[in-house]
Length: 264
Figure 1 (cartoon, rainbow, N blue to C red):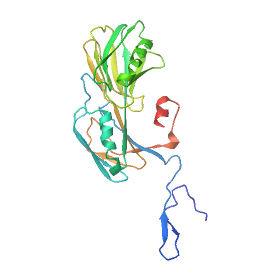
Figure 2 (figure 1 turned 135 degrees about the vertical axis):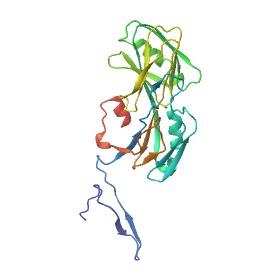
Figure 3 (figure 1 turned 60 degrees about the horizontal axis):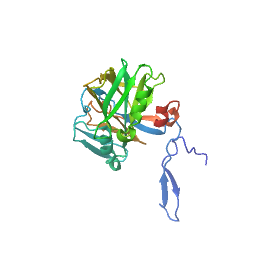
Figure 4 (figure 1 turned 180 degrees about the vertical axis):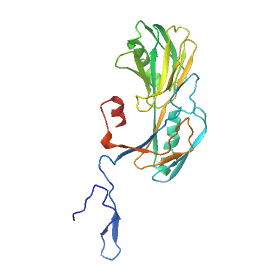
C-alpha cells in the first residue's frame, strides 16, 4: 500500500485479523539501514588493561548497575583484582534482566631492549606457572620467542603473534584471564610488557619491565554488547569512565585487519 517497510517509518501499524471489532495485531519494523543497525558497545576504558608491576590488575570492588532494553540488572564485583573473564560472567548472569551481555579478551605487547636469554614464568588460565624461554640474538626478530609462547598455549591460554616487523609480540588470552609474568633469574635481556585495548591496536598505559626478578601483570578488556542502547553506572575508573553505549554499525564494519574481522 505504498508504505516503506525498512526505513523506520513503519511503526504502530494495525491489522484487522479477526471477524469482530478490536481483533487486530499492531506491530512496528525498526530502521534496518546499515548505518542504524549493529552492536551497541561500551568498552572498558579504565585502568583494568594496563600493565602493572604487581601480580594482579587494579580492579577494585564495585557495583555495576546496567540499564538496558529489558530492564535493569546489577553485577557486584566483590573481589579486588577480578579478571575481565570474571566481570563478563557477572554481567552475563544478569543479561536476562538487562538485555546486555559482555565479552572478555586480554591483549599485551612484549618486546626487548637488548639481546640475550629471555626466561619468564607465565600465568594465564593456568594456576601453576610455566616457563617461556628463548635466546635472542637480534631484537628485530622475536620468532623463537613467539614459538616458545605458543608451545605452552594449551596450558596458559596465551597465544603469541609477531608484529609485521617481527620486533614485538602481541600476546592474547581469548578468555580474558590476566597475563602475568615473573622474570626468571636466567633472564639477561631487558624485556617490556604493555597492555592493549580491546580494539587490538591502541596501547593502554605504559610498558612495564619484566627483567630478572621483576613481576608484571596485564588485565583484560571487557566489552558490553546489546542490540539496544543502554547505560552502565556505578563503575569507577579501574573499569570504565564511560556510562553510555555507542552504536558500532554494520555499515562501519572493516575486515581489513585481524581485529576488525574478529569485531565484525
